[in-house]
Image 1 (cartoon, rainbow, N blue to C red):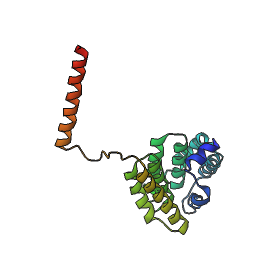
Image 2: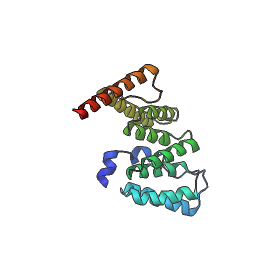
Image 3: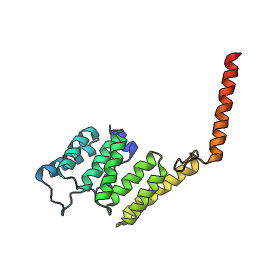
Image 4: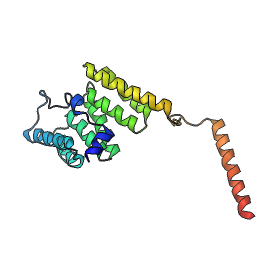
Length: 188
């Protein structure tokens, strides 16, 4: 389980730790604070399934606590529950639009999932939230890695625009030829 944390490299306690602390201005109940601290401890001990339970309870008790949502998103990602992870990170970014950790983590997750368009959108939001030199370095390194991956990777189609008429004719013509070939092959 420890290898899983280091391999995925979602959680970096030395750099994100500053951003993921209990906020002084948000009134939290004692139970929410305890659940958050225990959830963070489980996350750091590479027990993301246990962290999900504790951080889910924290979010239930304090729905506007963006740091808890970021950690919950990390825990979901580490347990391979990708859609809830994305949802929690997006909500954290909406709750606190100036939270670097929320946008950076969402960008990193989208890049890992090979969703570059959304990754660049989240990285752009993270850029607007930078307050420390370390954050700028982290974001620069993330973008550098993604650009290298794009240069060295296979070109993939973006399905963010509908097909034009010519493309549909070519695709349907190829499909028709394949069907005719199959029918001729079956008859012989």
